[in-house]
Length: 65
Image 1 (cartoon, helix red, strand yellow):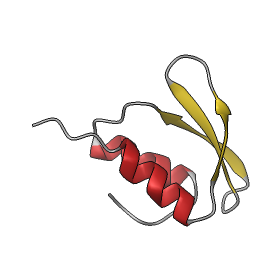
Image 2 (cartoon, rainbow, N blue to C red):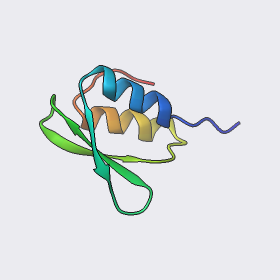
Image 3 (cartoon, rainbow, N blue to C red):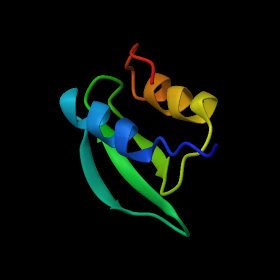
Image 4 (tube, one colour):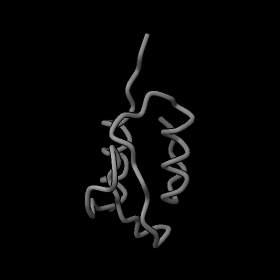
């Protein structure tokens, strides 16, 4: 069963005050995280929980999907 995590990741990023900056190259978006004070690259399709949790960790968020 294919589970897509991109909506969950974007929702959690928004809840923590992260903002969409721009579309990146290929199938990626760039978000800004005020928690880590760095941009975070978010793929358009996220099909692995490990990848989704890594993005949140990169943004300085301890929540898991």
